[in-house]
Image (tube, rainbow, N blue to C red; front, side, top):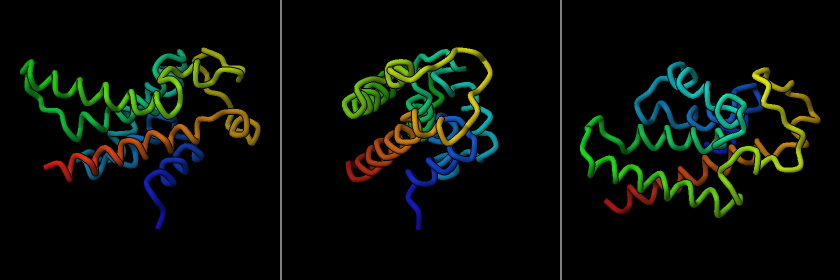
Length: 152
């Protein structure tokens, strides 16, 4: 049996973006079908549309957290609780990887903000930490989910 982290890495290697790869392994257990999850998370790859801002793996993790914990309420206290979760998840990712910003995580790798995705070649995978970052985000969120289940 493969782990969620391995499944997410495989999704990335199949051509899904980093955000899609993370959300994709959690979506169904959190009540969203795979196709809808792929559509919603499609814009967040490459640090939000390849602008190299917040890492897509982090955005995917945040979307999964929304599905898992947020409500549709406009309550300030519920929003605050969700924002606290998001800040904690971001800090865990940052502690492990040094940043949540795509361009900082790709420091030393020639990147482009062109809207055209890079060709996924063997060299692409060797130069970029993206596959590992996908796995890290999945592991961080999976651990967080398990902690929340045991805290109840």
